[in-house]
Amino acid sequence: MAGAATTTAFGQAVIGPPGSGKTTYCLGMSEFLRALGRRVAVVNLDPANEGLPYECAVDVGELVGLGDVMDALRLGPNGGLLYCMEYLEANLDWLRAKLEPLRGHYFLFDCPGQVELCTHHGALRSIFSQMAQWDLRLTAVHLVDSHYCTDPAKFISVLCTSLATMLHVELPHVNLLSKMDLIEHYGKLAFNLDYYTEVLDLSYLLDHLASDPFFRHYRQLNEKLVQLIEDYSLVSFIPLNIQDKESIRRVLQAVDKANGYCFGVQEQRSLEAMMSAAVGADFHFSSTLGIQEKYLEPSDQSVEQEAMQL
Image 1 (cartoon, rainbow, N blue to C red):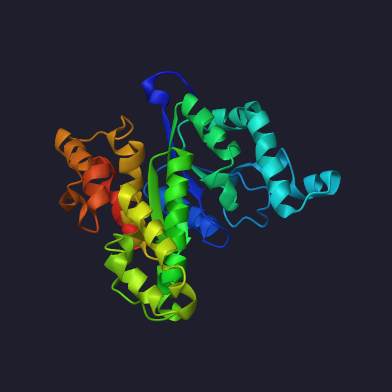
Image 2 (cartoon, rainbow, N blue to C red):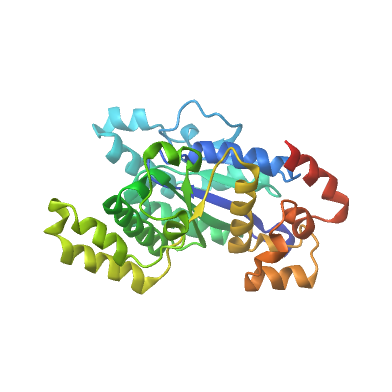
């Protein structure tokens, strides 16, 4: 996909642990983007993903199947999935040939849920790096189930995993707390939601952990983990309810800033809009029709209005 600036492609690499809602996110985001008038191509990079609910433009299962790998090499599901990603890494010409006809589309990559692929294994990072050479600008969208907020120990673990993922994947990064529509069913939160999304003073979590006899013995370890997270000061979250169009809009705004789509030539924008995005002046995008005002040309505003009314 290399070439002139007009051929630059944009997209999202949707990552996260199993069950965090990656496939559901790809479905909801693809529908929202199409309602905005964008041409969308969803690419399934998870060979274990069966019964896809969305229209799949490219499926890695055509190249390598997890079941075949497990049978032929006597591997379990985890080892088989790692092998599949290494096989894809060794056959990127296949992927490029599949993506080339889709030039001009906005890509959503539905990635495998193996945590090690995003924390220390090199195959997926190498694939993303090669895509950058094809002039494909991606944002890593990392989904985490919001129910982890109800347990201080699990939330600290999620913060560590998110930080490791951000450092390893080496892409512009947006962390999401998914399934926010279900959070009330998980139990009462110890703090308000902003505490978890902005990752505020984590010492309060340590105090909660100290009340548990088991975690009391590991207070020093927990203090060091919290110190590490706060020293980097990189992790924050955006709450996501995939059923809520306004919630999806906020996520899309953050993703488009991260990968540079809001600065692209595909949609004409004023200098004011570009500077607002650069400095993070969100008041330009605070209304429900913020995307209409800053992301679309006047001729396309009617399309956006219809999208937000769906």
